[in-house]
Length: 187
Image (cartoon, rainbow, N blue to C red; front, side):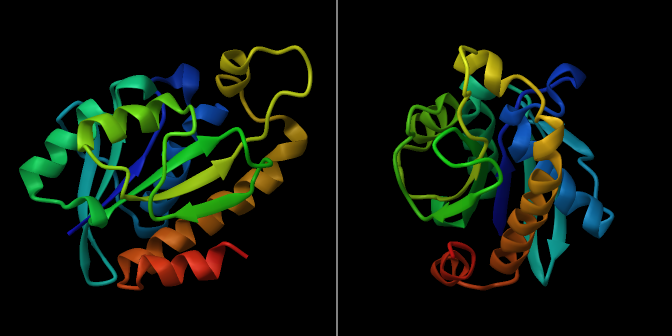
């Protein structure tokens, strides 16, 4: 069993913001396969489906970003999912908008959602897709920047990268070793 977690904030107010790119990738996966988040438990909305012959849980924590671990850890424990079978998608200020970078482990890099996950899981060794949202180029505070929608001129790049990140998730869920998925997508 595998777990694909998209990080974001609940509510319509945040739906298209940079901070919700993890939700957007999960939504793309669900849409492609006609799935929907039809369960709510463990402080999260989730679906359990078969994808490429593998049982996969798709999760969007409803705790707000800074408490993401409060949703992920209980779900992992309940379903017996190991850390190596987790893939987390989240926004990253240190990558240009639309750039994706896959990693099998690492620190939180100042990202509070990842900080919460590392703290609750007790390990830094779980798969992740860092999705670049760039940094503000003017005097906009970082918190205001990540809680704002993508600019009009970024939207096509973001759409293409959401599709690419969803492709990577499908490859991994289909049984491809994460190291091989990393090699394919970190070009």
